[in-house]
Amino acid sequence: MKAFFNHLKTLAVSPFAVMWMVVGMYAVKAVLKIGVGQHIHSPMIAGDGFHNMADILEALAVLLVIWISKRPSSDDYPFGKKNVEFFTSLAIGTVLLVMSFNFALQSLSGLLALFPQADQAVRSIIPLPEHHPLLMDPGTFKYVVALALGSVIASLLVSRHQKRVGKASGHASMVADGEETASDGIIELITLLGVLGEYFFPAPWLEYPLGLLVAGVIAHTGWELFMGGFRVLLQHSIGAEHEAEIRKCCLSQAGVLSVDTVKTFQIGSTAVCMLTVVTEHNTSTIAQMKYGLEHALKGYILAAGFKDCELHFKFQKPEPNRHRVAFAVVNQDNHLVVASTVEQASHVIICDVEHGDIVRSKQEPKPAAAELSQFLKRKRVTCFYLFHPQPDAVEGITVATAPSFQAHLVGLNPRSR
Image (cartoon, rainbow, N blue to C red; front, side, top):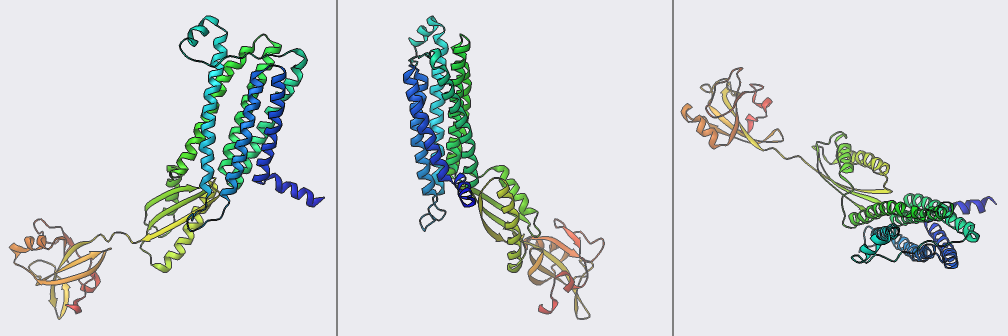
């Protein structure tokens, strides 16, 4: 018995089992609605039954799409075929938009029918659909109410379960079909209100303004589904707010100087992130840094509602910030030191600086004082160093105090000169 209940629990969260349940629900609805609608001459109920037959085909299409999306990845499809589900989102979104338009036209047609002269004037200009008032007798009222109420409850409960299982299993097509099932439930609720309004009050017109409201809600749902599928199929980013948080997570990790690029897109329910991280660390440290980044980003992405994530990192050194500086030097007791004044200096050492380190240097004789400024400009020197608290000024050149008079402490290597 325990094994039986465990099997039922497994089936309850199986996408295939849930979608077959949806097919069965729509089949029962279609048979009952078409039968009752034709019996009481209700085009609204019978028409909804035929609409449920189309829902059966849609549910079968979702089953096929789920099966295709579960196929393993290959050389031709390295990410698998998960994005096929978003074609269903596009299709269902389009169907809902068309449905909302037709439902709005029927509701407007019903409202205009209350004013025969206005109805005739409008129909002479715009070809509105033919209006069919709800027909029913007291003997069939309870059966119609039971059918309508049962349909509403079934649609809303099944829709909720569809969306929950679809989100848990990462099937966007199932979530989209759940939204469409919920829209069916709202339409069925309007049908029920129309039946009750006509029976208890002489007011069958109540269903028409409510129908316009429902048409707007369905159109909103359809547009969201359509645009959601459209963005994923065009590899739209997962969202500026998510990318900002991803960048923030990276910058909070030790050793990360900046994040040069963040590119994201969605494959099925998987978020794919490609990041270029700027750091000064070497290869051995980068391995530890990458582990920390993966842990932090995966936690955020999964908490944001995605089922999985793929992270691709590229680590690079920061721009070298190349520039040139110069030191005024003099030989004292066979040791090269930084001169205190321009007059005291015998040579000038031109240094290429990258990442704050001197990578190349060249020692040249100091030119005459009148020519020093032009000499330094020709060498593209950005700063000229003297070892003095108030160093001599050089026209057109920034002059600064050297941190030490000892050549090796400021990055110079006198032995190589």
